[in-house]
Length: 375
Image (tube, rainbow, N blue to C red; front, side):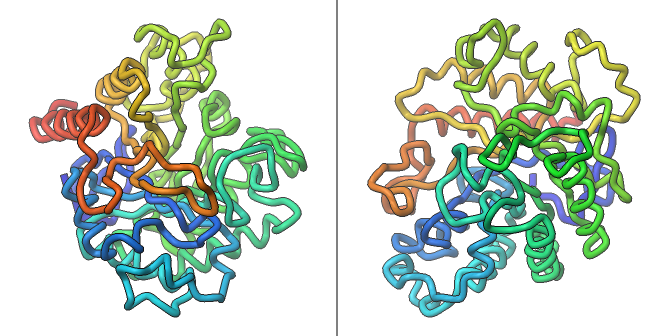
């Protein structure tokens, strides 16, 4: 379903001006946060054709990771990264990001910007990108970069949200926490940033990831993010099979009831269809908040069980989500191949396999549910 912005939230759902519910069915298109400072694929296909391909798969939105370094970079993108887009040659990374956002909007796709890294490199390790500040930037500089982008795209209504920071975690400068009111308090930093950006564009969805690689929102129920426009808040976890579940087992090793229990306990309890039998024992007095799983995925050789179970959980809990990633080919500044993507090596057709089938089944099922008004 392609609804029209601006969007707000109500009772745990993202809604348009008439109250119609929007589930973000997104894909991550990475590259602008990595060594090349530009989305991948522009050396294989025209940018408009890639946007059309994204929509043809069934996605209604795109999560666009970027680095703070990319915003400040003035050197043009290397020509060999733009072979199929000669009109972009000689342009800076930020100017090309402009074209990406505008092209996605023209195609009718919604965009969420994601501050993925500070320096342009692959994420995520125990490194200087673990926090929103570090040796390369201060919290003030982080917020100033967000100001640049929010002001820059304020005229594009399809740029609907800001995912404030990717996978805050432990790093060489310290460990992110939720609510300790110190320099490493992600709750405080996200709240200040969200309110400041809403003063520039009150129509933005402010998307706040959990701590510990965005897997942990256990404290958000008792210490929620408080925005001046509370109806603009969305929480965002990440889910991969190797993430910790309980009893020392990873999520991929759990039965479906165990998976539900683990995810409900970590963050699912915040959402619109929260289970009432999680063991948090926290009195939730606030209204439900929309949940957008901004990263999930699987490789072609992975066992389908975990992804099938996760898709079932998403459907039953009526959640938004984003596949990681769209991309294919060699990862930036690496000989390692990206195998988790959903397009072929020429970036001109979907890669037909079991993962695409599960993703499209999820999209179709969610759309049918909402069209019938089954909430």
